Amino acid sequence: MKILVTGAAGYIGSHFVKKALDRYPTVKICAVDDLREGHNQAVPDSERVTFHNLAMDNEAALDPVLAREKPVAVVHFAANAYVGESQEKPFKYFDNNVTGSLILFKLLAKYGVNKVIFSSSCTTYGNPQYVPIDENHPQNPINVYGTTKLMIEKALHGLHLASGWSYVSLRYFNAAGADDEGAIGESHDPETHLIPLVLQAALGRREAISIYGNDYDTEDGTCIRDYVHVYDLAEAHCLALDKLLSLKEGESTFDAINLGTSKGASVEEVIKTCEKVSGRSIKRKVTERRAGDPAKLVADYTRAKEILGWEPKYDLERIIETAWAWESSRQY
Ligand code: UDP
Image (cartoon, rainbow, N blue to C red):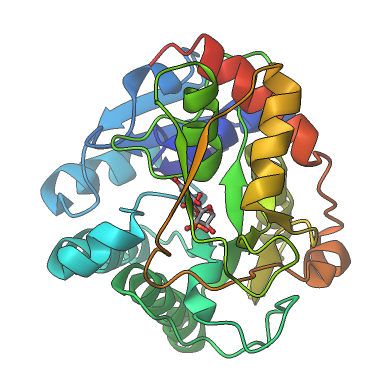
């Protein structure tokens, strides 16, 4: 059996591929990534992985790959994922995230592949009306990135209604951490995420970490987010995939599931935990608030537990330990 993985050389996609190879000893993976943001070295060198360097919107190149490889399902990670950039270059995000996904779906339909695990995001909820956020929270994204993720969730639902596709949209909160063995990890250019930036400050690669506002309505005044380990995310993808692969002929299903830990951590708490794990003191400077940052985003993951039997295994300190191991000796 073969699974198509798009964005396989990206941060979360590569951790999924590594985990899936361990978890499914006979499954083969057709890995696709255009390497514009992904890293070649992040894709495991395995005879069970075939790697294709191409973009989702390259219909002419993707078509023969699907014809030849005959995947039974797709785990669709490929996307641009910078909120700030999506506001500056909306059409890049509409083209790559939306049009690219639709081209992929059209080809999947052509080859009878109708099972999709989709990387969605808590960004689709917009400003929270309540926390913890469950899946029934209204989806009103406040930026282009979140809008593109919601558009694809809707497209998948349309395909479920029209053609009986089965899909699970997994709405990630703050993905963080790295491989336990330090083989793969987070590497964005530019890096905008809190934990790698704090650890780079600990290593002296940055002078200080900027705290984007300490006057929020939270206990210590800094923003609260729900950090979830990338292997916990990968495990949830496997559980969702198991569910779709166990469907009987003619059955179809759909779901949207939050992936977070339900435990929020403030920016200050993250920095303190990074100091503890690294054994170094980290210089902070408080700067202005970043536009569009809600004070608190925390998941209610009850549905993931009920539907998938999923529980996050890594707490904040473990997450940061794995990120520290990676950041201290990263390969790419
Ligand atoms: N943040 C910060 N300084 C930084 C980067 C991020 O204070 O240099 C804060 C940001 O305002 C947010 C939290 O850290 O409250 C997590 O931000 P990140 O960009 O990692 O993820 P996001 O929540 O935006 O998806």
